[in-house]
Length: 174
Image 1: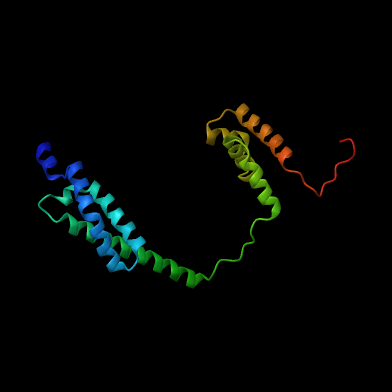
Image 2: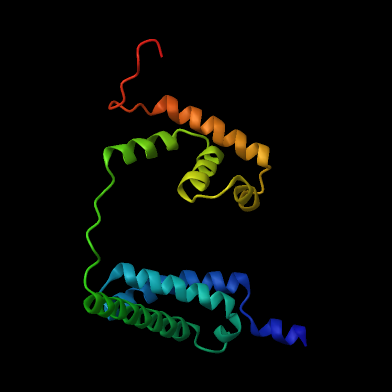
C-alpha cells in the first residue's frame, strides 16, 4: 500500500526539475494576470510551497503547472480581498489618531539599551516596561531569581553610566 502511495508522489528530484522548468513561465503568466511582478513572484513561490506539501495532487500524469497557476491566482485574489477589507475598515473607522514620535529621552534610552547584553536588556524591559515582578520574569525566562536580580542590578548600573540627565545638576563632591 505504501509503495502505491509513494509512486503517486513526485520525488524530490522530479519536483525540483518541475520547479526549475516552470517557475519563470508561471511567474510571467501571473505577472501578466496581476500587473505586479513582486506580487506574482510572491504568489507563485507560495503556490510552489503548498505544492510541495501536496505532491499527491501534482500527480505525474496530471497537470501540475495548472494546479500551481490556479493556487497562485487564488492566493492573489485572497490578498486582494484582505486588502479591500482592510481599506474598508480604515474608511469606516477613520485614520488612527496622530502619535508623536519618540523624544530625545526615549531615543537616548533605546540607544543605551542597545549597548547592553541581550539578556540584561530583556530583563530590564520585562521589569520596567512590562511591569513584571522578579518571580514573573523567572517564570517567563527560565532564569533563576538571583540571575534576574543580577541582570537588573548590572543593567541599572550600566544605564546610569550611559545616561546622563543634563537637567539634573549634581551637587559638588557627589
